Amino acid sequence: MTRNRFWKRLAWFAGVFFLLLNLFCAWHAWKFTHFTDTAAPRTNPNRLSAFGKLKTVVLGVDNPRPVNKGVPPVPYETITLQSDFPLEAWLVRTPHAKGTVVLFHGYSGKKSSMIDRAMILRGLGVNTLLVDFRGSGGSGGNYTTVGFQEARDVKAAYDYLRKSGEPNIWLLGTSLGAAAVLKAVKDGGVEPKGVILEAPFATLYEATCARFRAVNAPEFPFAGMVVFWGGAIHGFWGFGHQPMEDARAAKMPALVLYGEKDERVERWEIDAVFENLGGRKELVTFPGAGHVNFLSRHRPEWTAALREFIRTE
Picture (cartoon, rainbow, N blue to C red):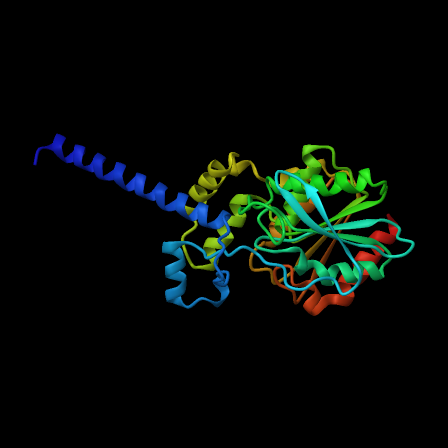
C-alpha cells in the first residue's frame, strides 16, 4: 500500500467515524430532550445494573411524558397560561394572602410533585401557583430544553399574576425550574419580589456531564457533543445556557437551597450561582439531602427557611 493510499483510507475512516459519532450524540440529545407517550418507567441511572447502564449509554434514556399524580388536597382552580404552548397550572388560594409563590418543577417533573411544597407555603400565608412546564403534565408540547425555553413559561406565569393585580410574587424553581427562573429574570420583564432556587446547576454542559457520570460513561467528548446537538435541535447555543451567568441579572432577594449529598449538582456549581446573585441572598444547605429531596428529611428546616425568607420580604 502506498503512503498516499494509506492516508486517504485513514482520512475516510476518520470521516466516517466522526459522522457516526455525531449521529450517536444527536440521537442521545433527541432522547434526552423529548418525551414519549409510552408507559415505560423513566430511566433512573441510580437503579440500573451494569448491563442497564451499558444499554442506556448505547440506546439513550427512556423519558416518558410526565403525568400528574394526585391533586392539591384543598380547593384549587385549574387555569391555562399561554406560552409557546398552552400551560396547565393550579392556583391554590389562602385567605388574606400576602402574595403568591409560583412553583416550577425540575427535569422530567410535573406540578403534582410540587404539591407538598405548595401546602407548606399555603400554611405560611401565601397563594401558590403550580405550573406544568411545556411537555409535562397537562401542558402542550412534548419536549424540554432543560430550562432555556422554559424561561418563557416562567414569564407566562409571572405575567398572568401581574395582570390579575398581584403585586407580591415569588418564583420558586427546582433544578431545571431554577435555571428557567434565572433565565427569565435575565431575559427581562420578570421582576419578582424574590426568587427561591433549589439545586440550580451552573451550566447545561455540567448538567449533561452529571448524566454521563451517573451511568459511568466518559464525559469527553460525548457530553459536549450532546449539548451542541441538543441546542441545535431546539434552535439555541447549548453552551450559552449558563444559569450561573444568568444569576448576575438577579438583583432581587434570593434564597438558595442545596442538599449536601446531591449526586447531580456539585457544590462548586451552587457557590458559582450564589456568588453571582446581585441582591440580598442566603444559602441554606441540608446535610442529609440529595438532589432536591429536601422535604423527606429536612421538612422543618426547609419550612423555617421559607418562612423567614417570605416574612422578611
